[in-house]
Structures are given as structure tokens and as C-alpha cells.
Length: 238
Image (cartoon, rainbow, N blue to C red):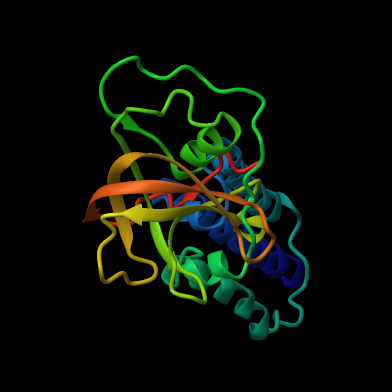
């Protein structure tokens, strides 16, 4: 009996873990932890865990019954608490505090994809920063541009538009920053998400944390927007 109880407990924990992983993927909760590109692996992992739980139950049912032994310590079920915490208490995405205490992660990309020849451009913060710094705005001049990110203010109150980039997961998230000039809203709250419309600016500054390059963006209009489902950007960060 004790062996069966052990296998039942193992199967329950495996099932809960697999179901939690699938729940995180299907509800986009995983985007608070890892980059979007890992979604297929997480789906596979959740399915494998649930299949393993089913196999464990089948094995426990098929194996010979033994004499009843000691019951499993109930404290072992406390292992399920972190799983429920993952479902019920989603951590907030990294924001302005992390951005102002971490230097820009902008690095020169291997190349620059072609842009539409006409019309306004909708660029990510990292893409705008990379093209402005390393391509010297060659294909940005004279174009209407919109970028979306969250607000961060440095120690002197200078405003930045930021997007955190991921290499793998939130633990290695680093910011890419754009300094703002032009018609910047007079009151800005850190962590507010904004869609900015404006134009390329040739001005440059350096990140006060690591002296990395930070381009300016000439703002002509600003509109608050909800935080996106995926708050991180795994492209153009380096």
C-alpha cells in the first residue's frame, strides 16, 4: 500500500506540474517568465509531464498489492503550493526600476531588414534604437515613426521609452532605451505604456549606468496604451 501511495502522490504532482505548465502557455502567463519562442517546448514539456503522470498511475495499478504500510506524510503535499502560486500570483513584468538600474543592452545587429518604401513606420524600441545608432538613421529620415514602450525616468528626471529584451527568460532581461525630445507630455509616470508618434533624431546620449549608446526620438504625439500581452522584446537587444 505504501508503494502505491508513493506512486499516487508522484503522479498527482506530475499531473499538477504538467497542467500548470500548459495553463501558463495557453493563457500567455509564460510570457512573464520566458521568451515567446519557447512556447512549443513548454507545450511539449507539459504534455510529457501529464503523460508521465498517467503512466505512473497505470504502473501503480498493475504492480502487485502488498501489505498495508505506513501512510505517506501529508506534509509532502505542500510541494503543490508553488504550483498553485504560479497560477494564482503572476509576477509583474520588469519595469522602470530595473530599466534605470541596468545599462542598455543595445548591440549592433548583423544587418537591417528592408523597410516599407512609403507610409508611416511602426518600429520596436530596439529596432529604432539599432537603426538610429548603427545605421545612422539612413532609412528613418523624413519618415513618420511610431514606437511603443514603457516610461522610465533617470535620476535627473530625464524621460526614456524602454522595452526589456530577453535572451532566454526574465532573469536575464535587459533594457533598450530611447531618450525623448520634442513634444514630450509634461507629466510622465514611470511604467506607463505609451505609443509615441514622431521622427528620427540625430541626437545621441549615453546611458548613465554603462555609457551605452542611447538615441533620441523626436516626439510629436503620445497616447497611453495598455501593456501588451508580451511585455518583453527578444529582438534587437543584442
